[in-house]
Image (cartoon, rainbow, N blue to C red; front, side, top):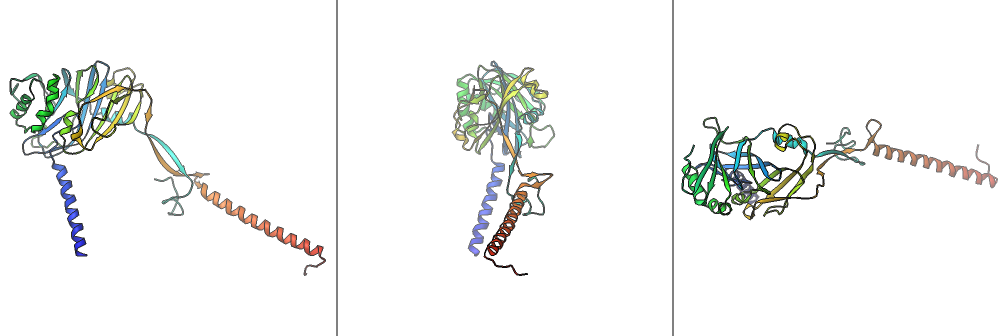
Length: 369
């Protein structure tokens, strides 16, 4: 018995250690860029959501991160195929998108009572600042301060030069990141490098960060994901795509199969959605994808137009089937069945007695007085 308790205690301690370790593990990458904390600090990305607008020529990406850890500042890098324009995004955008794409609510009725329904309960109911460049291979296209973000738009001819730029700004660069940037350097992409620092002195990066809006020219809808292969923990991606047609990834790029949770036409977008989409109707596709093994990510997401088949998730609420102000149908059915059975039994009894009397009369037997 003592050995069993010891094993259980050891298991609990190990699970707690694993949980605590996951909270402080370095998150060198998140879905669409590299997140690099300062030395001796840690940052983790719980989830990254992005809204993407593509009109066939220009792509606009609005990103929102939810982070944890003890980092007081961090650097984040996103490769882009063309010259980028960077500004702050509207925090209301994702709330509006959630409202537009919320699942359809339907009732689903059941006949027999379940736990929580009478007679299994008491009643029944409805249920439940940095130098301009740190090496000759880096060019600074622009530099601006946007709220809590210090944004530098960079070009690079050598991935090592990007590493030098980050190190010159006091950030610890994983060696693996230099190799991961090489394919973008070879394709002559540019980079958005951001220093994240809370405006309050001594505060840490925690919770939901202000969205960033990045726009660039692109002949195809591409969502950079290759740097996410550096992540040490499973990644999740939520992607809202606004385009002329329903858009889906060409391949899972090493993750689980992307799941479409909404696809439909937005006739009259308003507020932050209208500001991103423009004033004409667009189609919105919502994608969810998990990357249980980020090291398997082998490319960026490239999305293509598919059939404009609408789709909306349906959430069912199970309700007990009732009539007449809340009387369970099963009770009426069972009660009615019992009543019919009683009436049938009475009828049979009277029929048997009547037959017996007729038989007695026919045999000349008088019934007792």
